[in-house]
Length: 394
Image 1 (cartoon, rainbow, N blue to C red):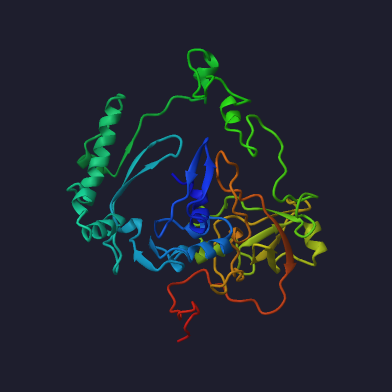
Image 2: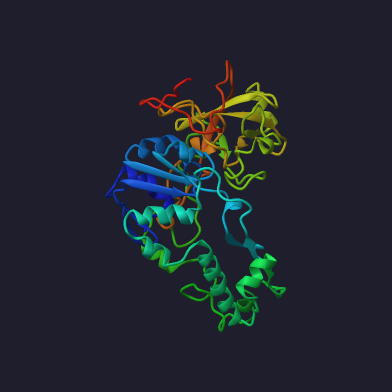
């Protein structure tokens, strides 16, 4: 299993062996990638490194109902229908598990779009594997099976659920009110009987198991380690003095709904993703609230709208993750026209143990943008391009 955050490493260095969770992983030679309902050009750090790696793939297929950045960098795009055009199930209450909703389609799929199930059934049919894929069931039969499997499992817990036909007609089923719950309450009551899932059964401030891995970048106990780059006098801060935070957005879910113009109008500044900056740093750069600015480092550059706020101390700025990547062109180093912070982030693993993303290890500089700003290219439908990737004007 390749850690998802190390996929770009696999494209650039196939065959390389890396440490991961106490073992070794040999990065495979990928030739083709299929992304279904996944905007990889949002979640992966360091856009220009991605561009370099993407050219190693022979074929990229995207399956989506939005023209995301991933679709723009795909060879083939298969149009999926929206949740309003297919039948499905969904739970509600992320932690409370309040019930299940019948997601009944409102209209048939428009144009050439299909439900994901039908897209993959069509693909498997071409390889004579559709019977294995569908197991002899269509979309609604699968919906019913998933529900009935859940009903059977809950029945063993004395949680009653109506038959599928009754549930589908009503549109939802609600579970009984849950009991008050405190994390690790049983462990706190009797740690010997209700041991945790650690080697010792207790909360471990020191892990002998991790220590035995011998990782230089992840000891068996918490320890300060100097970062690759760090603001406020740390490595790299002489050239790029601002620490860029790329936190979860408060107006959307990751990159979902970034395509919505009415929603963007509630938070965008100068038509771009906001960059939050403190008044001291803004004044030192001649930046006022609402100005169009360029945020940059050695890994990339982007345009953003300055949001001057007292909430940010000197040396700290923020661009919320999920902004759709829209470069001025296909070349390495092209200016991102909208404000995707992953244009600037660093693609290194958190440690040899986890190999996750290190999104918040990122230093930048900011300057007021001067001149004619390029149009935002992140949104809209397909465009015709020449063999060099340049847009063909009508």
